[in-house]
Image (cartoon, rainbow, N blue to C red; front, top):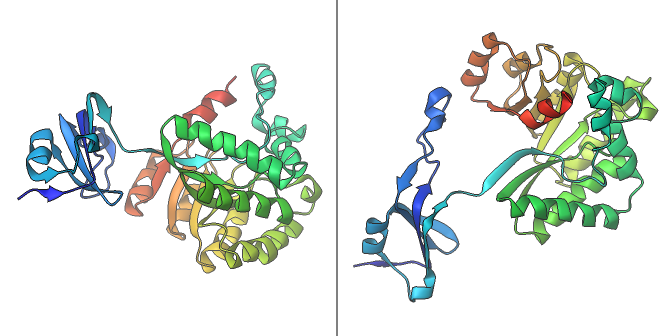
Length: 307
């Protein structure tokens, strides 16, 4: 007897991304492809996967309208953007001219460009202005197939504006057909007012903002930018320990522009992911694999930085 489901989707190719264990190396080429595959949906969840013949013979729907004939299409899971900063007011497209003249990341930062430019715009915006602009950014991502987005703060760098960004993440997660995962990245850069007072910024981050984020349940992850011109390995460890002690999951921008050995902090902290890693050394690969840490590569930022 056939089981009743709410929806059946038939495809030319069904990509399942199914695996009994985490994949690495050449094994990642296997995307779980089912030729002429199909899936059955019940109560909003995938109920079964298989060939078209298997699904049609084992499941039924209450009307023909509940069968989607995508037989000339590829059906695949929604895309996950696991490193994004969608809550901002303006892009930094103007800085490409500086990069074409071979201005580096640190040089742009010194002229209040880069992250600090985005911070200025966010600090000068109201909650409504930032919400509406960010909503457009998320909807654009959704239109390109992203259904889950990890959204980082880090463009506020003070209590008021970091909290503002995280609350916008929270509100948009309710208002949009997207799953938005919120990450607190107060350790994205040292703000202008703390350029010569790093200890003062650490006190603000650890003893005030981080505690408020936890109390109000505004973020699932805490991230730190560990690199030259950002936070040192020692400084990053201090913030990560405070976050881990509070029960946050951890991420880190690591080894992007220079090799600092930041990846070796994985010996002491339970990272979900380490991001960028353009300068990582081969000797570090075994540590990532041993700790089951996801390596998030961002070729777009590296390519852009070479203009």
